[in-house]
Length: 373
Ligand SMILES: Cc1ncc(COP(=O)(O)O)c(C=O)c1O
Image (cartoon, rainbow, N blue to C red; front, side, top):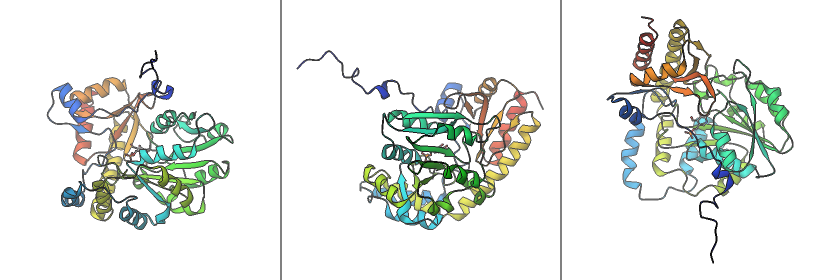
């Protein structure tokens, strides 16, 4: 049988028109491009303290077991998560990063050609990337000028075919976190069939998280899912681990469709270990909160517009061309995140809070670049 259509012509349309996630620059890329030996990376909202010592010991201990498949469903990790976050075991679905849970939710809830998904613009780009890959219409409404949430604008996009509304709190890239009452009010106006996904990747860093988080209130709402990641506070970005907490019946559907060994053995053991490493978690939160206050103060003194942040990063508008500043910082071995790609914010920059030393080096470099010494 012969056909004139080539194997690549016959690739799915969603894949042909797909724009992939654009990650920030890696340490090796910058070392190579600028001929540098040492780099400070404040671009991807990773943990400033590195990997927890307890996790490092655990990984060594379990290195010899990686020839085994993990236990399906990672039950010991689920126990540890349930205990740490005070949520029921059967509400938890773990994933290879919370990115994978986002994908599972879309595949379980949204039908191509029928449903739509709603979010703010800008938002964490994986909501759009994964909706498009799954062939789902993705609708966005702008944030308010101060990056707070325009709930009415969001609700205008919602109809009976909306299967998921995504919100992020504290938000990426601004660090804004609404009062939890506002999220509850949004929920009360959504159709019962629509799932409200509240992505709390950065909630641990919030001041008074109890006034912002939906996680402790989850049991009261059938159609709410809260996402958490182990990539930030828990310092496991490279191992890939996250989870969604949701109604047990919905959780069961996600378990049905997920790949059987989606969380690997080392990620499972590392997740269990870090949840018990209280000194590491407490130190992470202390360093981040102190660094956030320091950077806010110093950047404001340098005439940056700093958006108040509840996260482990701050978004700023630079007094000079952001591209120029970014390029000058790269030459000095400092990687921050310009927000052109993925977020469409050409004037804004996102800076991850580093250690006290890293934050100081950043401020000195900016003073030098802006001649503000
Ligand atoms: C808002 C938000 N959600 C989810 C993620 C992804 O987390 P994970 O590393 O668990 O896939 C990120 C990562 O930067 C994020 O910013």
